[in-house]
Each structure stands twice: as structure tokens, then as C-alpha cells.
Image (spheres, rainbow, N blue to C red):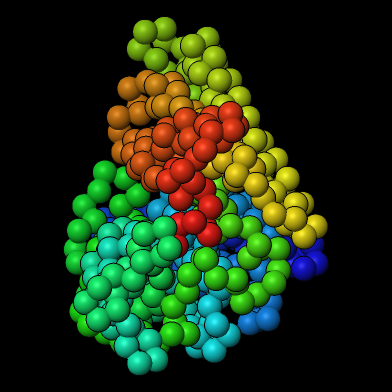
Length: 396
């Protein structure tokens, strides 16, 4: 794809900043992304970035995708998170059979997808497809979605289908949002505007071409779909904390020029401890971000050249995402501290940054457990079941 077209999505995200900011408080109150903002982001194509070119999508590279997520998250973490989820799941268009992909992703330009990878559903084999029942958590943006993904264990009659190693066979099911019941469960500390509620379906029919497994070859041959999607998603999650941390640093930089401390009667910008906190925060953010983008670019070069990532390279993607997210959270902690008594007021925005970045950091893709998992991979351990978290062809 031409560089100017890739850049256009970043420019579009930057252009949406005033709308994202204007709707941030409404999203926080209503616990969902306001529909006018959803429509503006959809019209800009930000929910379709990983749809293959064969279906009329942009199929952008991972670095461009992360820059878009960061750009939105610099204004509002909830909006950035919803863009991350919908944009990431648009990659499913590259894995589904063409007929199903066309129906779900190709016909309606404003179609938005969310859902869960956790196999909490049951898919009973039926002629031409499956009968699906289940309940799944954390469907960010589910209230404005056209389709919801629900991972299921496959059942033949009344017996679970097993692989040769005895593990259950699972598949991702594309569920029409109109057939799903949204359960009001998202009363969260942070990222409140994502509307990450639970959802449920009972005995609905899903045709074969509306389901996929990462064990099967993707329908599209581009390098984007050669990158194992779970590892790629794990790296992409970190873009939201990176954006939130940049926002927190900007808030403190602005606040420091006006806020006068009670202790010294000087502005924050003249306080040596604030100066040091700002320097440490900037170093944490920039180093974590550089590690993430360097690792992504290396992986992209491998798959673009027809290669395959090994376990250590997949572990490095997970490690880079985890480190970037944790560095971002540390930077926000420093900025909350630097803001002194002003930080406790909602009007500064620092409290929300703190809540949002810590909520994003609870995602399994970026939790501290990943440090040990990466270390095991680098030391040549037999990863065993841990590899399920690294390699899609083992995980579904």
C-alpha cells in the first residue's frame, strides 16, 4: 500500500481528536462510546484497518495500525481501546472463507466487530454449520457492533470433539449482534467508556463460513495474515497504554506552568522532583515504545520475506508489548505524583489516565506473567502448554 495512503489513516485519527475529546466525558458517564463518535471513526475507516485488500480493505502494516491506536488513545483511552479491538478483529476477514468474509466485512462499510477469544461457548455440529450457545465477557464496544465473536468448544452430538493430543477443538464463531443479548456488567474502575459488557446467545445457527480456526491456513496470503494473530494482538494492546501515558505527560507539562505548590510557593516546573519525575516518565515511555516498534518491524520483515516466526520471536513480541504497557503505566504513576494535590481533581484528567492505564494493564496480553514466559522461551525450555499463549496454531 502506498505510504501516503497509510499516512492518511494517521492523519484521519489526528483530525478526529476534537471529536474524541468532546465525547470523552459522555462516554465515561454512559459507559459506552457515543454513537456520533462511533460513526465518525467508522467513516474514517479506523475500524477496518486489517481487512484484506481483496475485500476492499486497506490491510495496513502493524506499525501504522499501532500509530492510529496511539493517536486516538492520546485523547481518550476508551476510544483508543474500542478502535484497537474492532480494528484487530477486522483481521478475521483474512481468515474466514471468502463468502463469509464478504458477507460480514465486505458489504457494510460501517460494520464493526467485537468479541472474546475465551472458549466459553459450545458449538454443536449441525448440517452446514453449528448450533451455538454461550456467554462471553469483556466485549468492548459491543453496543455499537454489527457482529460479535464468540470462541466455542466444538461438540459432536453430546461429546466434545478432541484433537489427537486429547485437547478440545475450538472455533471462533461470528455471531450477528442482533441475535446476542448484551448483559450490563461493565461497572469498571477504568476504560469505562468502552462498554465492555458480557453477551450471550442460546442455540443460534452459525454457518460453516462464519467460523474460523487459526489452526487452518488463512484465506488471504498477505504478510499480515502470516503473522500469528494472537502474538500480533498482544503487541497491539500496548498502543493504548502508550497513548494514555503520552496524554498524562502532556497534562503535567501544561499544569506545571500554572500550578503553584503550597510547600515552596513556586510553580511545579521549578520543582526539582517534578523535573526528575518528568524526565523518568519520558524515558520510560520512549524506551518502551521504541522496543515495541523495533520488535514489530523485525517481525514484519520476516513475514514479508516469506519467513515464519519461531517461538523465541513470538515470545519477543509478547515481551515487547508487556514492557511497553508496564513502562507506560509507570510513567503515568510518576505524572500523577508530579501533579501534586491537583492530581486528585477530576478536572486535571490525571486520575482518569491513572485508572485507564491500570485497567488496560490488566489485559492478559500485557500482564507481568509474560516476562517469565518470555524468559523460558529464550532459555530454550520446552514451553509445553505455555506455548498456547504464543502460537495460534497450538491455541485453537
